[in-house]
Length: 243
Image 1: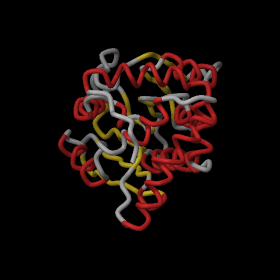
Image 2 (image 1 turned 45 degrees about the vertical axis):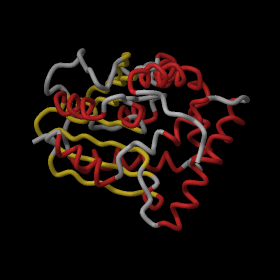
Image 3 (image 1 turned 120 degrees about the horizontal axis):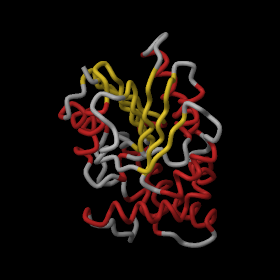
């Protein structure tokens, strides 16, 4: 599908960090155009799930791999939220998030690694969200374990990311768009070829499908794990509880 070669596990984190720093200023425009603005609806679904899961509760939230702060902004706008931490390991992406969250008292931002949340104690958060970030970590099991650790008993983890399309006919069209059109769209927005726009679709190849990711949640002791597909399974939202 593409000649781009995924970076080895040993250098993946630095590759992702460096290249997200490069494209941070135009990442929101890229997301809007490549998803036909649908990513906004998917992120709103995260907030709806939180609100339905925690009626009349004051929540401490962690938006992990927060990127430019799309989900963080939505979390701070919830009446339920008491404190919202936005964490990302790309300094430039986090800088965009900080600008968007300026002046919001409940908002806190810091550089951090999803596989080593050393700045947070056990059982700190009611809610942890990740939007299109888990496939970028170099150790998925370790990231899930850390997320489980920092959740309070009864806490909710919600993950939004790419999924696998099961219908073979739809998959042909989806793969053509994702692997051929999306990178070109990125080049046009950036004004030059950039490895990150090739990395984004290729990274989905090694990312688990919906059922395998559900199993990985359960392996890390999440319970009541479910998922919901969007656009025929091109995107999926998984969630689970720490009991």
